[in-house]
Image (cartoon, rainbow, N blue to C red; front, side, top):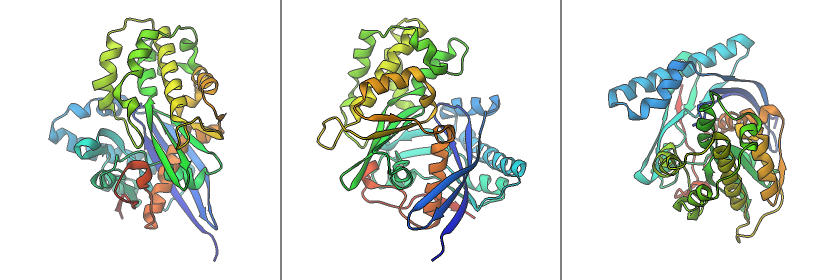
Length: 356
């Protein structure tokens, strides 16, 4: 049987509001899956969209519904423009949306970006809304990326994403284990913003600071770190648990960033464990915006028992868009794209809504 080839546009908008990642990906199904990122771009959000995403969680119901359609249309317009500028085509679009609420304990999660509006604006079929079915099945609705880690990046024992939240996945026997380890850029970027910077480039500010032991102790004592996998974090957790602690400390930006990097690296090292709880060995693939923070990476290398591997720039920046394209493809083929061992759902399942 000849290999099957698919061209899929993956869309990812992370909690740190860096922008919209668009990746045109080619997948070939032979004996195993192979992939390549054909074209990719990060679209910086216009201030009107960035402001909407920052504030819509506090809006009334009518405003939320309007935003759902408006942002979906915006996504579709960006896809149409992206493909037209490159003379490219795709079979369909797979969109994560932008997480506004993530409260699996209360039975819901919500990613902004209406699939129907996106589909019409892009002129292509769309797969979206990947998380809610998992929550309905008793899961965390996150993380979803580990299926892609397992099928596309299986040569690495561990896969770590340093986005707004640091999350990890790894194989434990014959099952995949994953979860959110700690906030990452959601903690770091607002501190850099106090200096008028979008982020702490290369960790240069943090490098000039000194970690504060009292703040480190308070962060490490948060109940979240005593929970076992699967577990997930949302922006609401930061507002409830982290922000009140951080607001009590009046530190220089350098010292605060150094403290947060120390906390992040320590939390990551603690999360790299075997099923028996002892330090693991192997290779750790690191991607996401935080993979460009040299100071943070050096701390992770010093504290972690595994070899830290940094891929080429396209994988660092667009791995999540690539994997959401792949999750959409699995949904398109009606194959499992969410693992119960990762999310805590009652069963493995095939998630995502399709708009033709």
